[in-house]
Length: 323
Image (cartoon, one colour):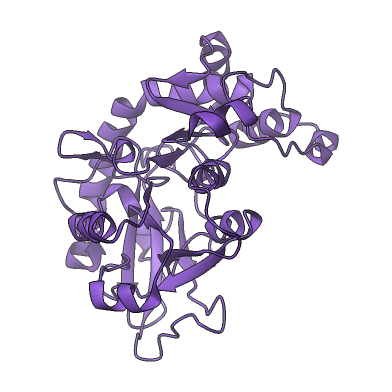
């Protein structure tokens, strides 16, 4: 497995990041320590009973599962489409499984193809719907940010995301009671772990001893917010380069590359589905990529015995010249 590139921060970005103003929220969204923290706050806002079932796709970031378990809830794994890897809406199946809440991820800068179906199902059955846009900064749905709908949602600035700032996230839809309980309107002044990770990502000298510091609160720190505001400001410029890189990949991979749609909010990451193990051709040898492994997360998780092939993610975070 090859490592995926974790841009876009560079050493020359640090002075601009440190010069950014600090805000505790952007519009209706609050900055929090991470995407999984944001999901936990949203789940907590629902006042679900202990052990309640939260529907998520069978192929998903383990941090989502950890967040659900941390809130003493139970992950309910739902089938994904083997053609595009999105969680699909099967109303009859969902009625039988009886989820108490649904977390709907929007992958690779693309809205889930069944977003409308999930919204209709959640409304008709009075089941809370949370939008996980960790991979889809800037994604709009019917003219508004996807995370402003239903029970709200999360945008992540963590490792490997479209607007990666090393750590941190934005969350919408958290109840006022939880905002007050976790003091989300205030900011942590210092977070050595986040600052150290940023320096590592920039290729600057870091202090290994700082990695021992871990903050378990939900609030974001000043450095997290400053970095997030910076990458949000340069998102359009990054996307211009990413789309140029996308054209290069399309020329070399053609129809094997999934996700060439005008609806995409970001072209930072692509997926490739191969029947046999894949090694990039020489002209793509410098493209950061990784294999995504599917595995049964629990006894009740679907095991895709009839789902042949290998899934890869390719990053176009920086220009090919920088590679």
